[in-house]
Length: 88
Image (cartoon, rainbow, N blue to C red; front, side):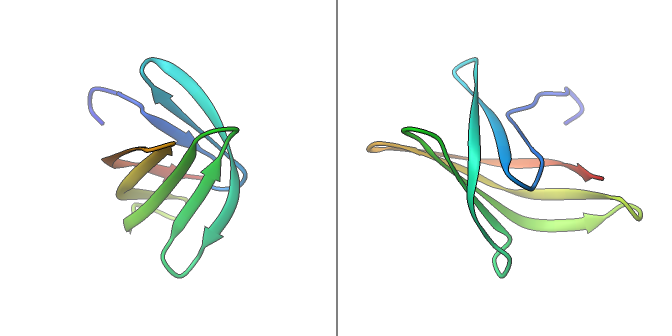
């Protein structure tokens, strides 16, 4: 986070953008599971799952978050842990 390296940006609503091999790819929300705090996105050939595992409030409008990003394209599945900030 201190290096300001971004792999994913989303608006926790209908869009997410991730960087794969230096390309920014757009995804649309298909489902949100409030119980597990998991977001499911897709585009024409790739699925994206963002699991928010920890959410610690900084102030009224901002939280530190941790979780996992899972990308599924055909038979390839990749996952990476993330940390970030969620703000309104």
